[in-house]
Length: 76
Image (cartoon, rainbow, N blue to C red; front, side, top):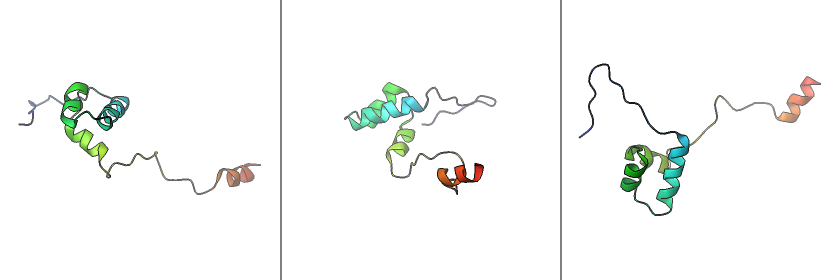
């Protein structure tokens, strides 16, 4: 059963990107998702999403239109 929060109470995650990466590596080495979730304190759904094909880590903002060389040519 999911945890319910009282009014004014919020969920605060106690892990960061590095923790998720370490947990994913442990799963790839053979640790079960459920056990990894318990040991590392990361929700199982988060781990399942990260291991799925739907997750794609991208940079911020749109891709540059000009190459680095073209940009240098315009600057000088």
